[in-house]
Image 1 (spheres, rainbow, N blue to C red):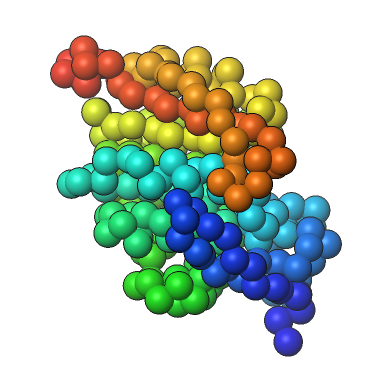
Image 2: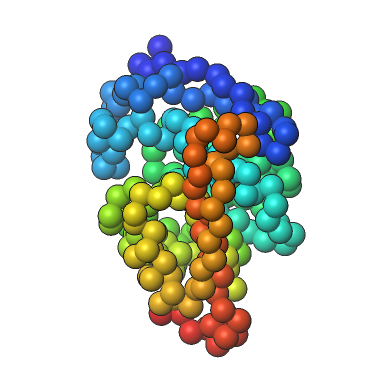
Length: 227
């Protein structure tokens, strides 16, 4: 036994069903070798990766409509990987990343559940450079601004891994930390547009969230004026 309980759920994105293995609840915890603790994941945070959050569903919906042609895409904090699975189904060049030591096996299992090829995965700590990861045309993430210091950490990740003409897409349920992130990306030449919409195409009762889209201005991309 792995020391934690799971369940299998089915959600619809754009009318297509996705079968996902998730943790049974937020009380699950198993870190017998201390890998999570070594990565700075507390017992209270341990189960967060294994849930399907409303903002994660919103990001998956948004990934149905983005232009993927010729673009290399990075998902930050992929968790169980729904958005990356949607992109994989569309044939995108997607790399999923997460800090949690179980994110990779959960993502692989969920790809298999949906008869999809395995998604390329990299374990990533936002405050540690990972030069071999390379640069991307698009960086996407959902509900990653739940701690105050995440804005600066994520802005640093964007600075290291975004191409000059890159786009950043973040779905946010409104936890109050998006404003400093927007200011930091503005210093890198990004302009933001915001869309408010339902966070799930099955159940509008889950409330509404924000899709934050950041695009470098044509001048910044042309001159390479990235702080």
